[in-house]
Image 1 (cartoon, rainbow, N blue to C red):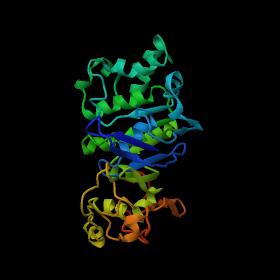
Image 2 (image 1 turned 90 degrees about the vertical axis):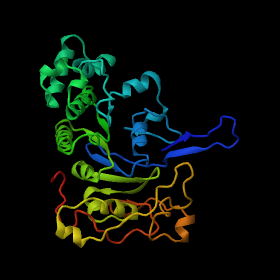
Image 3 (image 1 turned 30 degrees about the vertical axis):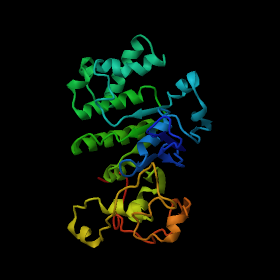
Image 4 (image 1 turned 120 degrees about the vertical axis):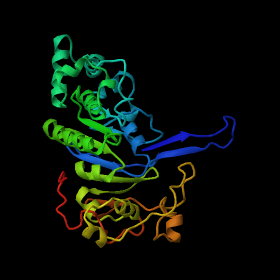
Length: 331
């Protein structure tokens, strides 16, 4: 999948310039799993999520959902397919219409797709409010009367209204307090198990991804550079960029903290308008050589269920789960 934005300053310019927000992402999401997508700000993870739900038109590529290409759909066909694919947005305030009461916000998708009518709408709205932990008395309030965590619960209820199969969560906890983040993460895990949901969980905070994901894709400058299971990524990162991200995560245990060598990524992220040749990470990589500067590494399976795009993948990493059981949701 590719998504380029035209950023040419003058409309009459002969040379067009493009921002390569997503530059060749290949991902598979399996039914019932949570796929985490992480990376620094500007790496293209949110754009990837918007492409999946077709809020953005792809420049190139396919978006296959149960064998059907969403990228080729339009009109009524795409509208019908949206019932199966929903999204939870990053900002729980700006994503809700401030002039609509909670009842109408949750009922809107039901009316738009004409799945319920009359008293059935009222029953479904109250059912969804119960599911996400909102009292029914709140149905007549406006979004500004709620806390950030409560507003995000409203957004989750809207996303669940049509019984979707896939939900894209675009940094759903980044705007919330830490104590509220854990509540929303636990709620998403609970709903996934009860409703057999498939989640794409986008975030730049590794602790949140560690808590909820089954597999994790690490993005850098519009590309996926590492993809593996949650346990393997945190215990044995094989891409230098991933190791740098893990090294930046604070560890409360001083004994474990002193056992791990700190890896500091030098320099800034290159411009996606003019990305480096060869490996896009070579300008910041401590192991880069001439081959890295000229040849782009292939995204290969280095070991079972562990894909890396690097000429010299790390043989061993200092993951933050080293020495622990690393079971999902242990926090």
